Length: 394
Image (cartoon, rainbow, N blue to C red; front, side):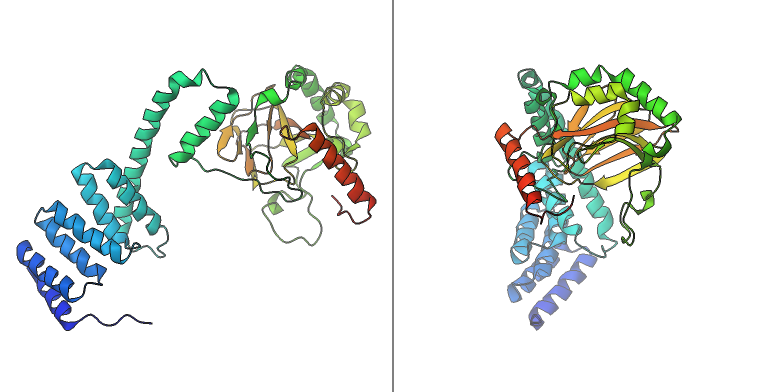
């Protein structure tokens, strides 16, 4: 239902107020706009005009009162929020200015198209917000320095994520499983090393594993294949540019619980190192282990994996400068010989911006937050589901 037209008295008083503002008579403008508001108290625009008159008179309290009245009529009034933010900023009321600018910028993001006159004003607001959060981040970081040495690796990582999230400096990502989702597991981006006491042992084999990979790549035969192989008839997706391409290549040692014996035979040190890892053993599903090769100037797009019941381990073997890896809100460089584990059901991406090949040994293990009983439960679940004859193929 359309709003009723404003009363004639409000229209006339507003006209007189605008005329007075144009001639520089702010006092008369305030009188006329006050009369317009009295004639039509439901108009936020008239309240904003009254606020303009108070601003011209240098009456900050009057301006803020009129802007609050406008926002009481419509909390989505982005212009009122902008003017309120400007006034608080000018008064040095930093907290109130931050709140008002935050509201204005949030509302502005939903304006499509954005009116051109608002663009520089919202940019001013974004700059204020950025400066405020930078200042708060620095203050909080300094205040927490004495505490960091008393915290565990997990506590430091979660605390850092909390501070950055609270101040809008990073996003919190959640699990998105394309397949099996196990409820109530922590949504860790990177798992802490203490969960994997065997990690140092496989890191110690980095040189031997790298040597076996290089020998394999000298004559890969059918062992090297594109990692992305879409089924015929699949619609275009983020994977289409990599489909059937060796820009992202893989040499599998294990795949869905099945050994690739020819590759294992050619890589005995790698096979032995993987055999010593207490990974999941689920027929037809786990483990998987492969050498992952990313050619120069290739990017793996942001994506999520199949199940949060596993952790994905990377052992970097060949890492030229210009390579990177992001999981959720944290980006890490690969470092040759330094393994890490992450939850691949949290959005992640990888890139090789160098002129050389990047190679990583990738394999899966149980999610460390699963208890021994839960691991047994999952193994029995798959066995029973498969035995029913109705289990969906992997």
